[in-house]
Image 1: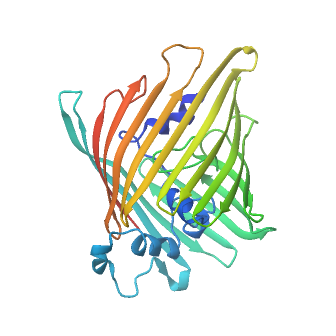
Image 2: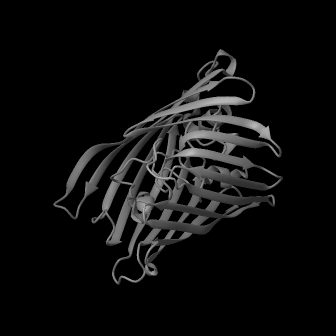
Length: 353
């Protein structure tokens, strides 16, 4: 039986766990583009298109070192775009001064991506990742309004997903999406068991709606998500809203707030548990290739239990000295009862393609 906390564990997973989401939505918020402009997955993350690879090489790297980025005729596409590949590898040096100055080099994730374009409408995508895999078939532009159909094992489209923040875990199911004008609308049905097998007749369902507004120097994203799952005698509801604003493609703020309800069906409201989850993140572009980052995470898994809440503040810099390399020095300050009990310093080495 899954617990609500399993849905929320990624919020405090930065230093100790492996995430299966390889996206940085601040670039989409900053430019006003959709996730699918850079990624094969129309809901974002993982395997990148050629445009996404070129954007990561030519647009976000430190200008003084761009001569080192030039590789003649480089592409992550093979056989005229029939095959594509990519990767995200994150290694870290971690220091915990509150525990007799513990320090260690750690592997956060090793992910390898592969894609096969079967025809103009159908793509198969596979991700090997530390601790699991993600795979799906994607039929794109087969529904009205530039709609898509996706079937396989992947993270349901809920809220805002980043490499260290996602709310709903990987599951096996079907997702449909359309893009009427400035809107993104997604509906999905999943096993609710986290995999390709299920031992009951119940299914998990998710829905997400988003509007993207471009007013020139100011860009806005606003949306809402919902998710429900029943496992045995317990039922979970998760619902919330999210939004982002970017000014001059330099200052970007986004937030994702959610309410959680978990109840015993037989007992009803008498045994219900209510929780709250909030993530907010601010980025300031100092110069091309250098961003200042401030993140705030808050989790209260049961508002009826005093002292149950946890919070986390991340202060850091994200530096792209070369194409394919990101350095992330950051201080992580934890309070409350989170699964990370000590403050930390991390130096993350992110290799990407």
